[in-house]
Amino acid sequence: MNYSLKQLAMVMVVLLIAVTLGSSTVAFFLLQEQYQTEDSRHDAEARNRLNLAAGAIANQLEFYQGIVDLLVQRHVITDMLNFDTGEDTQRWSQQVRSLLPGAFGAGLARQDGQLLGDPVAQRIGQSCLNDLRNFARREPFSYPPLHTDVKGLEHFDLMAHVVGNDRDESGVLLISFHISNLQQIMQKTLSGDDSLILSDAQGRAVAHAGQAQNERELNRYVSGIPGTNWQMTLLVPKYTSRNVIGWLIAFNLGVMLLVSFIIAFTTQRFARVISNDIRHVHQRLTDVVNNDASSERQQPLTAEVAAITPDIDKLAHTIRQQRQTLVEQSLSDPLTGLHNRRHFDILVAHMFEQSRRHMPGILLIIDINQFKSVNDKHGHEDGDRQLRRLAEYLGRATRVSDEVARIGGDEFAVILQDIGIDDFPKWVQQLIRGYDREMADWKPHGLSDDACTLSIGVSIIDANHYLSVDEVVHAADLAMYRAKADDSGQSRYHLASYRADQSTSASTT
Image (tube, rainbow, N blue to C red; front, side):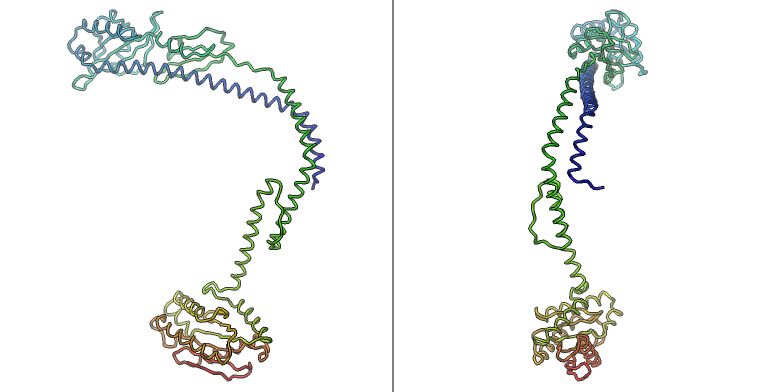
């Protein structure tokens, strides 16, 4: 069913009522999506803060581990492992604790895990000794280990293997750091009312930063600490959405007023613009069908129609080119580029009609002697080359006003205009001699003398002497066959008499 623009305008008025009724529902969904987006933003920001806090802890652990890795490279560490009985190690441990901020304990153990010196003096507990032996023996365990056995002395251990001068591992260096170092970093990364909790591999909280709050009113985010099996938990107050009633009322009123104004103001103008552009498109398509490029065209008013107008013009140009190409292909020979038999028939018929009022033309039917032997002995490619050579030669030897056509396999035709019958013999003799001279270089080896020479039949295109075009062509054909019968080894021609039923002719070789 087709609708007019006025009917569509009425439909739009009805739709306005439906839009007004449905706007509340739409507004609820839109606002809900908005606050969901807001919640997502707060969620993303919270996860970003959590990742920053976890990254800060990981960076601090990496910094401490770097210090431990530097200490094991000092020669004094290797010397103590090789020669010390414990006293130097204890003094070294005390020195490390006093110089390294945050260090809780320090000790050296041999490769079998046996600690040098007094564990108590070096603040090395039993849990640390167990971790030290596991690390020395390369046995799997949670690293870096967290120890919360004694309240107030919560700490974690960092260790590194000591490599001797012979490149063999000779012991293990252990330094314990108080958990308060990490707690200070957590405190610095807090934002607003956030809280951070650091937990060990078993999920036990070992450090806390921020004020304790009611977890029912908090969102919880958990992330692992890179390079460890620890966990960082971020507690963030839940985001409270604003009242949407005011937004909903404003949205409904705005939609109703806007749609009413648009319908009232634009329906009539829009209908006029669309109608004009539809007529514009129709006219252009009509021009394409009629192949008319001369009509004056109005510029479209809408961007959509303006966008397709170049495509219509391009289509019209393409169709015109295709039509021209089809005409040329239907009237030309694909091998030689000359006129084909169809075009020849049109030309000779036109010349025949002109001969009633103007000077008669002359028709030449040209056949290549023994052309089949070229194809048989040298192949069709050489045969095609011979046809193209003859076509090129005829194009050079004739005048601009003359017409040359290929009317059969090895048959060609030439229509001469504005040349008298008395002047013709001299012209055709020059044509024959020039061709034979060039054939001396063209002719393939192994052919007879008569091969590839020309047999030419000539008739006068004169409506006052011939009853029809067919009689003119038939007379030239008969003259060509009489020329072919003259096996002289050179190109030759025969001129047919003015009457189709007469057989008198002239020849030259």
